[in-house]
Image (cartoon, rainbow, N blue to C red; front, side, top):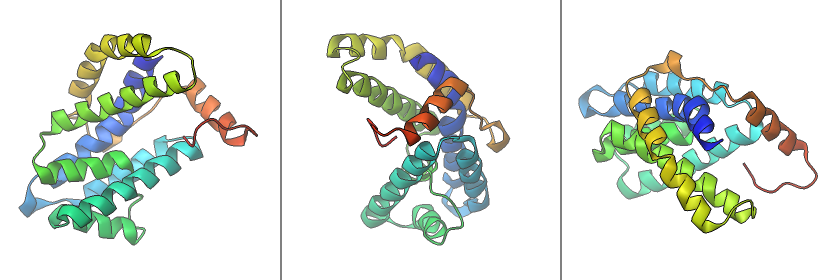
Length: 187
């Protein structure tokens, strides 16, 4: 399930959104905030469940607040103003792309880091839900390394129209979770 989620949802959505934002802001003298906003809006559109959209923008805005406070200049502060004014949604992956580019983190490493962080959180949730134990979770994470690397390589040079997600069963389950009386996670 993790492999499918990485290949069919996270890499083609958040991975490509991050890569687009990174590419648009990696050169200080030629920042393209229009491209960042297009990636941000497209990413919002492919996140079908409300919880996924809300979580992504909540964590993206939090990242922007911290980044602006710590080293807010150039593209980071410009994008933060766009988000604050409502001209851009502020998805986490897009914010991370802008922040990573401004810090000089290479685009491929930024995308790979996002995919690893997603995977680590995914197995941690399985442990918290008692679906698996720590040892098995680490084995799953280890086994997913090649998928993460391949997905990052595929996502890194894609463009805004390539931002997609196709995990219908996971999307439906997330939408059902939104309406559940007993909710296990916020996202």
